[in-house]
Image (cartoon, rainbow, N blue to C red; front, side, top):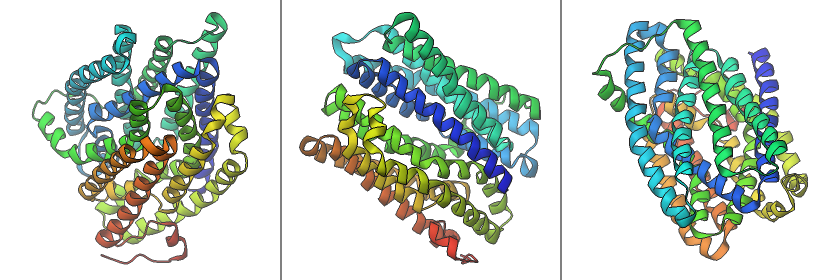
Length: 426
């Protein structure tokens, strides 16, 4: 386990560097307003992609991890047919809605090509996330991360740098093309890994479509809830303020997400384990697995948190002098992520141990809470108001989920379990 954590940590450090560059370069190479518009489009596309996926990425991860216990390759192939069908159906609906909204948002400045590229990016994000989740479910977590978190942003960086030296100024259209290309290549590579490992084939089975729709529904609520939670503040800010405000806020939020490096790295390794352990009723083993996970997370997050607190202005200045205005925003958002880290893998544990319905209801509630707070606070406090709304929603969600998991399953998933030897059986 320790060697896998070490390998994954090394990979995530490289991936964090690649992701950081993929955010710095567009901000440096684009005019601030244009970057704000691109960041807004990408935030919208990310949120819409979770509607397209309908939670099938989480459903597929769980099914792939349990395939040796309860399903045959043929049955999983039938479920894959349902998954692909759902993505196709939802792409039509979500793509049309996204196109109409972007046309309304940009007004006279809207170009049909922007809408078309946004729809294609929407589909490619959904497929890439699904394929990567299947790879994780099959136990190839590190391979999945190499492709999705490192190779994908590296490809994007290469295309952006080449574009800048050739054209001298990046446009929104070309940025969307490069992002689309990176996601498509990621999907192709993980798809090849999945087929090479299992030989899974999609088997036509029409009844699997309503079945997957039904069983993925609460995964969908949780899945779409998290990007909403992460982007409601940015989207609402874009609707109420200028593109420059969006650009500064987007950069601050992306930097704060680096704090989650340790949390994400560790959680990737325990995700395939939790469904199996819960199916076998090994609650003590789940507790010890999460406890070990939290020890690693605590160690990994101390350094980046300290670094961000000490060098806030210097880090923002890497994006350009215009972004130093985001210092207070970054500080506020950092508080929310610190609470997120302290509460441990609450959402992951709830979703993969049969509490996805409760998790979905909580996530829906906090999304509505964040939106309401944004509407109330942004007119008076601007970007800082959006940040306060985001932090409040994260704190409420994490505390509520930690309580639900403890009461329903008997497992303390917060950092406090580092000092506990055994779990309390529900």
